[in-house]
Image (cartoon, rainbow, N blue to C red; front, side, top):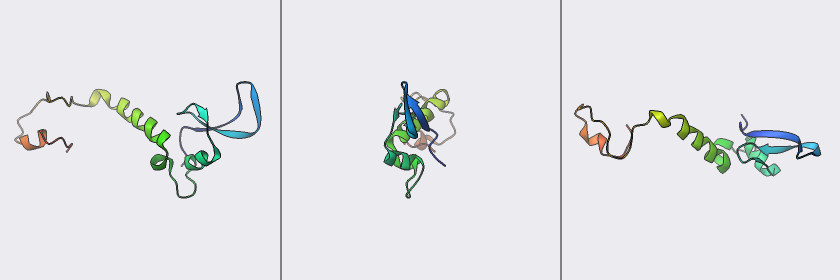
Length: 94
């Protein structure tokens, strides 16, 4: 599966190209062919693990998606009295 941010365009700013060029929607710019190889998961590369642009934007999308569902992490969490006080202060999500 190729990167969802990858697009190929034949023109930009009233300039037309003979061949479609790789455009990264996340970075809002055209990218080099080698970068497009990562976007297309070629040569044992994967956009979801090898592309810092994808990781930055996918991470931001994930953070915004669950923003209202997360509990505050400033020590004011509600404790339900379930008897597992050790887990609440460990800093690890169970």
